[in-house]
Amino acid sequence: MNPFTSLMNPGRRHAMAAAVLALGALHGTAAQAQVPAYPTKAITFVVPFAAGSATDQLARALGQSITNDTKQPVVIDNKAGASGMIAASAVAKSAADGYSVLITTNTTHAANEHLYKKLSYDPVKDFAPVTGLGKGGQVLVVNASAPYKNVGELLAFAKKNPGKLSFGSGSSSSRMAGEMLKQLAAVDILHVPYKSNPLAITDLLGGQIDLMITDTSTGVPQVKAGKLRALGYSTQKRSTQLPDVPTIDEAGVKGYDMGYWFAAYVPAGTPALVVTRLNELLTAATKSAAAKSFFENAGSEAWTTSPDELAKFQATETQKWGKVIKAAGIEAE
Image 1 (cartoon, rainbow, N blue to C red):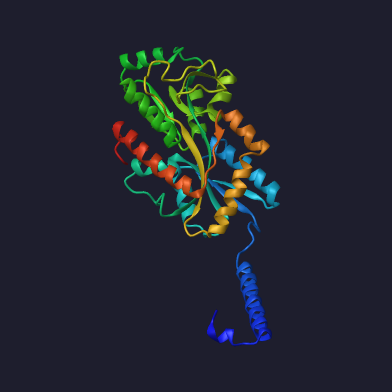
Image 2 (image 1 turned 180 degrees about the horizontal axis):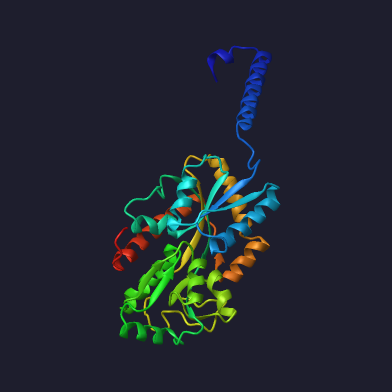
């Protein structure tokens, strides 16, 4: 005890203690008042791919849930093109207040830094990780009228006709899936880039390209409609949507394994309390009926993390994608 306060009479000591407690309570109230409620207005989910893409569908499902929980609207802003760089740059330059959220994939936050010599954003320094959202695989598809009935027939034709076949891709995941197929199967297939996978699917249906490896939410509906034929699945485990379709590894391309993931990021400097609240909202949203329907239809699964866990996962994935890209012989553009 302070020697000075020990000399005070009990009444004065109690009065001083009460004053200190009151001051502390006042300070706590003031501190709380400085923490803004969130959200108090519309949140914008910026999506790097076109409407109809898997990322877009997920963003809309999550947004619906958050609107139901908070009574605040969620606006979906599709900024397709440049492998997600347009969208990522827009969010990186937005106000760090939690109202501009990038709903993205490994394309912008693991692959692009290895595919481009100069990015218009820094995937680490410009963003605060919020949470992982989901993981999934991709399906190798050809036009239903194509002569190839399985992966073996497709690759046999490719080996006999180097450079004659073409594959489309509208995301880095899709592109790298195709490049890995070329690498492991030792075939020469021309790459044709698109702004998004749905646009590539359109050309595949029209016969402008010969094949693509796309997210299941984009490809499976066309397969079930009889317009495309599924030849293989990109991960080591078969798709629950296409249980009769072998994995590409099972089909003879040993070691083939290329999935994708979704995650949410906000601009660097966003208050930690806002990030925490957004993490809570998005985590709950992945369990909503709309999100469950998306994951089921897409053949993917919910996957949520803490901000720190997402940062560590992103670092690991960035290394992995770098190795795949280098092994595929792709030079940064």
